[in-house]
Structure formats: structure tokens, C-alpha cells
Amino acid sequence: MAADKNLVAWSAMIGGYSRVGMVNEALGLFREMQAAGVEPDEVTMVSVISACAKAGALDLGRWVHAYIDRKAITVDLELSTALIDMYAKCGLIERARRVFDAMVERDTKAWSALIVGLAKHGLVEDALDYFSRMLELKVRPNNVTFIGVLSACAHSGLVDDGRRYWSTMQNLGIIPSMENYGCMVDLLCRSGLLDDAYSFVIGMPISPNSVIWRTLLAASKSSNRIDIVESASKKLLELEPLNPENYVLLSNLYASKSQWDRVSCMRKKMKDSNVTAVAGCSSIEINDIADRVRRAGHKPWTAAVLHDVGEEEKEVALCEHSERLAIAYGLLKTKAPHVIRVVKNLRFCPDCHEVAKIISKSYNREIIVRDRVRFHKFTGGSCSCKDFW
DNA sequence: CTAGGGTTAG
Image (cartoon, rainbow, N blue to C red):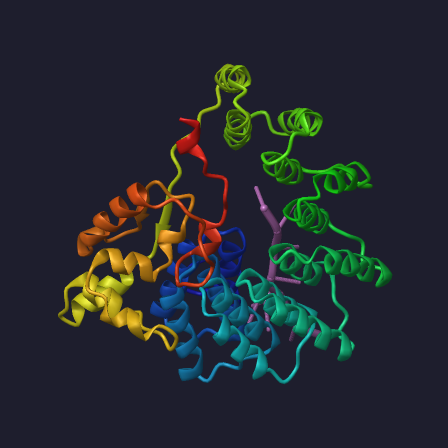
């Protein structure tokens, strides 16, 4: 199109990019749209906020929220839901809750966004409370709502509650999705009920996907059920012979049981299939903060800390060392990253190299999903390359 | 009559 791109054309394109995960393109196009002098409306802003959520771009998300207020754009049901999701994914769960509380009308998706967010943050009681309130208010949950409810139970060992919610779901006539089955398998596995989990998988009316087999295999690490390992790994490699993750998982599993012949067998299989793994890598967003700080005349890393002081984290402002910055971000609780790559504008932030070194060398624990990092990336959980290599 | 929008397990 030439110069006649109107609001709908811009919004359609931004929404398309956002939906397929090309968030930089989505946000870049939003900038272009502004430069072209086309005023966005609430529909445009849903896609922009959603792109921020997917990118874990809290600073930009906050800026866009302020922009929405400044331009007096109507915050309707869909935009509120997008904001809830963005704040939850970017680590500000209380702000997500505040957006929800301010809504005048809440449908299934709005409730689900908050419940899933609370569950991800480990606020299990709150998640289940909101679910009860949802039922009391006669808002019909759907299978996504139950992903939140069941994963909440899984993450705090509420195996009996989880089973009850599973019946509730069926009684409501909701057909469980693959994700719902996955939640139940995870729930049973985390509760140490590998046998129940395996029976559950065998009894599934649809063919389990690779995620489900990996969930079972991960749980098999602390069990002696060789039969389950054998059957699950067979299924997994049939489903995804080209996914390096699977070979790494299986190799590490066998290594943990000192079955070295099987470890080398996995390596061989992997090599024969021309599958290669690369070292794990995570990224955090520091660049635009650093940029802003630089403009304010501070040293970048100091600025990053100063800028990022939220309501909940006053003490972060006092940090003056990159290691503390990393701690503030919750990175030290991370299991996966052996390399931290700081995206874009590295030159503004030399200290980030130090952060990366410290984290990759010194720490090896699980992340807590609280801080303003892209925790949804960090908790991807598939990175076991160090053990493997 | 009126294009473009939100939630998803390991």
C-alpha cells in the first residue's frame, strides 16, 4: 500500500506480527505508524501490549500503558485483558491484579489471564480464590482457565485438589485439551505419583504429544521404573527424532542412573541423525533502560538500577554492583543459563558482561518467577547442555 | 451492513 494505509491496515499488520511472535517487527511497525501520523485506537493497542507481553518488555509496556492513558484510549475488555497478561508476564502481578479489579466487565478470558498469571507467580491460593469467585459470579471457565487452575495445584503439591478440579472440568462439559492433560501429568509427576501419571497417559483418549512424554521422563529421574523410561523414550524419539532437546534429556537421564552405555548410545543416535545442540542461552532486557539512564547523565548500570525501582523493591535502588543487579533480577536463582546474552546496545552496558560471567560461572539453581526478567523464557527448562557436554 | 483485538501445560 502507498500512503493510504489507514488505522485498520496498520492494526491488522501489527496484530499479525504480534500473534506470530515477531514482536520487534510489531513494535517497529507501531513506531512507523506513529511517525506516519495515524492515531492508534484500542484495537491497535491490544496488539502492541500483547507484543510487549511476549517480549517481556516491561519498560516499554509501562510506557505504552501511560500512552494509552495520555491519549485517552478506551481501556475495554480486550485491552484490559492484554494489560493483565502483560503485567503478569513481565513480573508485576500486583499491577495485573489492579487492572483486573478496575474492570467493569470481566469475561472468561479476563479471569483466565489473571488466574494463569497468579499461578505462574506461585500465588496459588489467590489463583484458586479467584477461580471460586469466578464460579460464584457464574462466569463459565474454559480449558485455558483450567490450565491455570491445574498448574497452580501442580506447583504447590495439591494433588487431591487437582484431581477434584479435573472432575469439575469434566462436569462442566469442557473437553480437555492436550495442555490440560499435560497439566494433570505434571501434577501427578510432581507429587511423586509416576505410576498414576503413566496410567493417566496410557488412558488418554488422544495421542500424547512430546511435552507429555518429556514430563514423564523428567519425573523418571527419581524413580526406578525402567519400563516407563523405555516406553516413553521410544515414543518421544518417534515423535521428534530431530529435536536435540530429547537426546539431551535422555542422555542426562541415563547419566543420572550411571547407565553410561546408554548415554553413549544416545550421543551416537544424535550424531547419526545429524542433530546438534548448542549451549543454552537466555537474555534479559537492559538496553533501553541503559539508554534512558545514559541520557539522564548516569553511568548505564547505575541507571538501570535506579530506573527499575518499583513499588515493591526499594532496596534495589541501593545496589551499586552488577552482581547485586543480577541478584535483583532474580537471575541467580536460574538453573538454565550458562550464557547470559544481553540484547542490543551492549556498548551502553559493559557491566552486563560481568553479570553474564558471574551468573554462568557461579550459580546453578532454579528461578523464582518474581522479578522483571523474561521469566517465561528462563523457565523454559530444557537447557541441560552443561551436564550433557 | 462496516475491516483490525485479549487468556494456553513440561
